[in-house]
Length: 337
Image 1: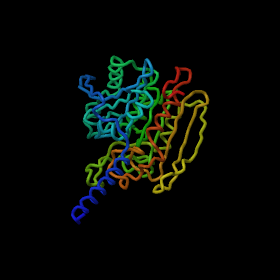
Image 2: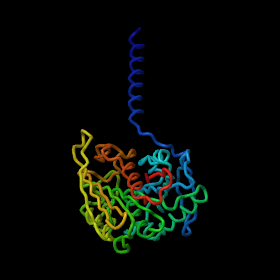
Image 3: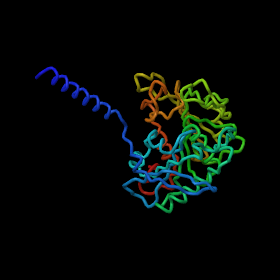
Image 4: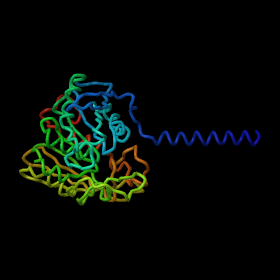
């Protein structure tokens, strides 16, 4: 074998090993093309959303989980970031990825520069319209409708629970505490459970409370735009537990698994001894403005925490499962066993 042939074979072998390693490192994602794209009119605006129905349907009526993007994001982006459709296939629920008007949600902060806030879009009505539309395509279980969102989507999730408690069973807010704007218009509904995931180094939504600072230029982190004021992480937990008749608190730590992330996650859980309501929170020391264990962020160094120590999908789905009232369970219904 001559040197040129040897070099070519060696290069090809190295390439195959590299590709093999890379492919094994990628998480499994249900392709966007397998999701149905819908357009409906809501509040006089043409609104869009994607949704995924599991191929194996085991129930007459399926649970629905809305997955809300952050400011400037999209429903399609959340398919990649969360990989929630993979879990929809596993557990048997409809995963819905809606698009905010002008890529934002009207979450109650009344941000001056936001087209969504200026128009005061009726986003809660949009979610009601989506559920009605979905129910014409495949029967929906109205007792098991949940929402989870990141950042602007996390703020909007809280507004949905406040203004549509008849529709939503529970919600989860990632990289978003409770805004002062929402506190002014919302009384936390009783018997509605909610969870939070926050990082202490979140440079957009401060976990200690204060002004939200949105990056004005993705390439220049020093340029920021004010986007309303928020309560602290602890104040947010207090706000959502205010309807409790009898509050019981438990705390624990989740030991780190990632050798590059040697910090324990702080877990808090509040229960109402007179109801099934739960408010819980995961506080990640040093965690940034992220969806933990998310896929579609730029790099682990920049976002700081992408290990499987905290898999947001499983945290959220098990929470929805736990908070689903036992007396409504049928057979082996998802989120309820």
